[in-house]
Length: 116
Length: 218
Image 1 (cartoon, rainbow over the protein chains, first blue to last red):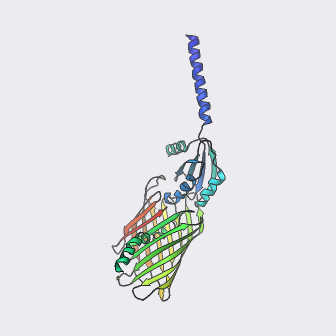
Image 2 (cartoon, rainbow over the protein chains, first blue to last red; image 1 turned 180 degrees about the vertical axis):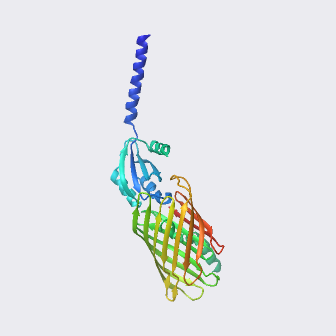
Image 3 (tube, rainbow over the protein chains, first blue to last red; image 1 turned 120 degrees about the vertical axis):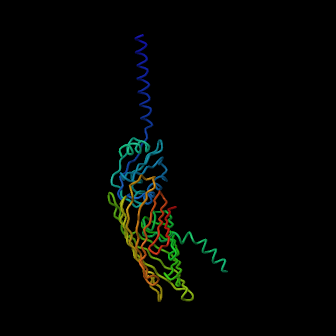
């Protein structure tokens, strides 16, 4: 019984490790931007529209209260910070902070809603 | 001919409706966007559409129908417009804008024959947070022998903050005045609703006339 239990545990750990490695290899990547001047949804839609049109964009999330815009990259593609800054500036706003995070837009949205 | 004119007016009505919202959230959209604006009340019907060529410049066209308080005098102004964002201040929780709006076009009236060339330069400023709004605008409507200078101030507050995808209600009060057609100051409390690309306002002024404004970004 003991060797069987050990084998079972070892198999379980191997599966968990493999799953973890596999999922990290496919982890979503997003760019989180803090934007100044974003006070109204009507005006800020320019940001969403312009960023959604980028070829590498999978999803966009705008949080007016926290002044944050999150852009998720399509699988296997990378978002360019300079392009994102330029698009937000063309929409009429100022970028004050930009960071790349290993999270999907849905995860960022859920985390920000939970924090409210 | 009369029927044609009537039909044309109805066809142009949505365009005319789009213009008086000038001083509400900004008279132009973001770069490469097209924006329609309208303002409708019995004595003032205005509509614009413009296209933002750059983040700061937009070209457009619009029409304005004005009527005196006694309903005897009318004006119809069709114009080409240029809008310029002169300066923008993006704060952490606020935005302030300074705008120039210039218009040139054809003016017709029921107290003179033919038409006159009208020039209509104006400036406006607005300040906005997620809960507070204030703006002021001045526009000169000038043609030979005609001065219909216009001024308005607006202020208001939103009832609560909302997420990006929710509808936000505001209470806005506007006072506006135009020389030559009305000697009264029109005061209109309005309910403003903003939801994504939709922006509408409706209210009743101190002359008990209904008013409806809208803006839409394509």
